[in-house]
Length: 146
Image 1: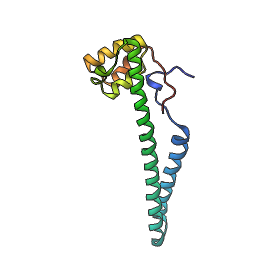
Image 2 (image 1 turned 90 degrees about the vertical axis):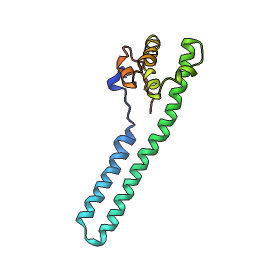
Image 3 (image 1 turned 90 degrees about the horizontal axis):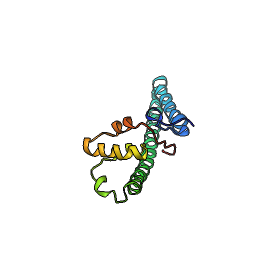
Image 4 (image 1 turned 120 degrees about the horizontal axis):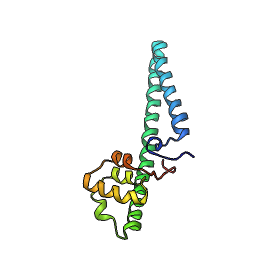
């Protein structure tokens, strides 16, 4: 497996991204084309077909993302708490209150030495998640994300 870094850290789920979503999109396009190529009696049927496929597509994208990301975000916060405790020997609550979720998520890719430095910078300089990720020199891979 290739070393993970800023440019390749995003993850795709092939059955969803490369099969289900393109299939739904194709069906929707097919339905829209049929609206314009059929007689007046069938236009309503193909219009309803296209709307139904669009709603299925929309719900599939939104629900998949909502559940998976909500769960993943909780785990990322727990990882931050555990890691902070391991490195500093105390609870992270006062520090965590000063960080937004994006900053916490960005810090997880930093090694322990960089974590301390970037955490301090995130608190003092208010670095964004993207700035934190771009500042990481030794990337800590995470191949188990959704």
